[in-house]
Length: 358
Image 1 (cartoon, one colour):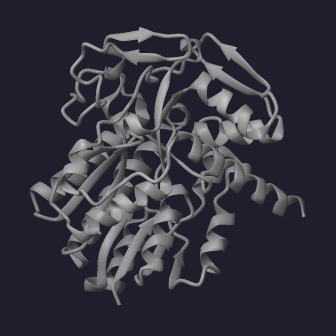
Image 2: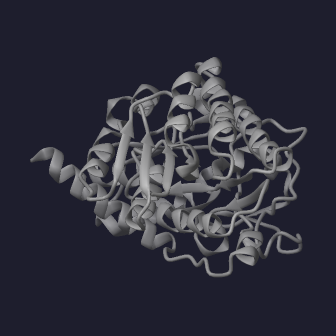
């Protein structure tokens, strides 16, 4: 049987990919040690999702291991060998704010962990596709150099700029910018993934995500803004907007749409590819717009405040140009727009809150 190794299987994208690949007949080997609870506290634990996967009726084997453990990763790949047809690498320390607290933890998880997986894959499963869930933070704060125009509720790229119509392409430089330590560790991993494709000929791809979100997200203040915002709206928890008048713009892609993109690559892999992947012009919003939508969906005002101090290195405007991926994989389509995403997050959170209360 064809095996899919999915790291971070209890997380947002990992769980979505597990359900998709498992539902299509692959044996999924999920790697997750719930480090998210260490990063962001018990409220952000992924155990609930791991438990759901283990009872989902798919062929799923869970491995409670740390991707920094070179021996454990090598043993896993040795065990499944040539049966491994795809690796979806989602495990990460995902917050640039948190990375400054423990730079060594951040780098060893994001960079060294990725290298361990790549080398184990090359040694025992060299024909497998290897997809790395990267980030737009590899571009650092360079997007903030773009000519932006302030509107009533959001910033937008000046209409005369060549990227205004479709968003930011892969051609944007990653050099000479403030990345944050998180961005630097993800750059290291991103370049390694490319190199194993270009140098060793492996089918590797970096999916540089915008805001990845959905009902499976265990959102926290330091990571997963849309899921955390909707959670605050539902529970009445105070929410803080940091800087840029709340007009900073993010594109948001539903984890289901991203998992479908991963499947498309799996069906037709290419070595050493890089894709910007996010909601693009199809699905994006500012903080102010997200708050207004959350209030409308939940049916009551949010409790929120504003801080003039923006997060260091934070993007003012990010919209992914996804045309490269769409050109190579024309069968891929968005299923969720921004309001659909927020409504789906709210529905999922309501169900989880009900279960935890019961």
